[in-house]
Length: 405
Image (tube, rainbow, N blue to C red; front, side, top):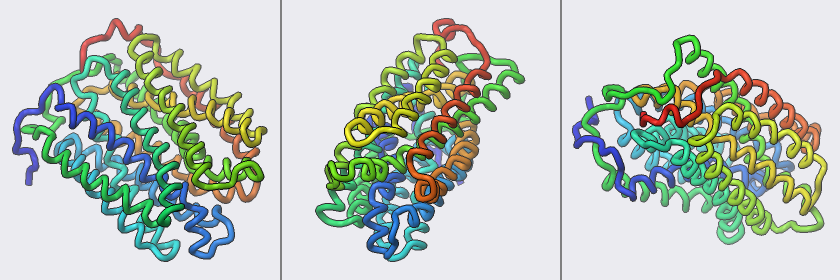
């Protein structure tokens, strides 16, 4: 059965489609982090004395976020990206509403795992769809990254407010309904495809020898693993970190959610800067210095409290978020469009499959050794990432390779 019975893919999508592809990135990250913001409230309702005891039940979402990327990427290239994005919008929305029905930890774990399965679709399908045929992929990826991280900010503030006003179940239901509506609009407005991406003609922006391509893919995946671990540790742990370090200063969950949303919003704009720099400056040194800069700010965050923590955590997230565009940019640079969803899926399966351990370990690690030691561990991970980036192949400056993929 084929789902590709439709008009040719336009070189540029209608504006509403581009907006929805970016909104989808925000939805993707928001839905995965609703639980991280609501975990304290849910744990109390389910009879857990400590939020850390409930946190491991969310690991299925992040494991599926990685494991599901491989089949999602393959379907995106061979079946069609438009159809897969419709499945994403509607599927993740329904999964979130089902999660709101949970009455114990295992039901919650099942719902979160289902959310993760649909969330796996976006990165290997939505981002390659967005950057196909664009002459400035770095800038496009930067805007897309901003949208994704604004979803994290929305998760912090909207979840906090919905918990305060209605309850934690509404924090899943309201965004779920929004996603389904977005899926309907996307289905109506997105041009249909006559052929799968795998059948189109194209080439990579930077052509490498087979040996160098293997090396680039290996480094890309290893760097993505470490980046994803830092991303998962921070975005899943920041809410509880701020609650602990602001004790006696600020304790209203809604206000702390607003502060965390402010951090995420400001930090998200670093992706715009980095995305534009990717198109203009040497790729490897830029990525290296963004990795190295994470080490001192993580160490600083380990030893600060209240408003000083707010400042140091903002610096941490600027560099964590600012490093995100590099992996997608590497795929655009080294892989032609016919294979991008599959390559992205393979990379995400390995990276997020391994980094999902961060979610599993977060609660027990904080309970056993505290946030200070955890932040030092994260600084060590950032140092490892810096060493990995040094192994990237050298290449000419981007200006020498300005032909669109």
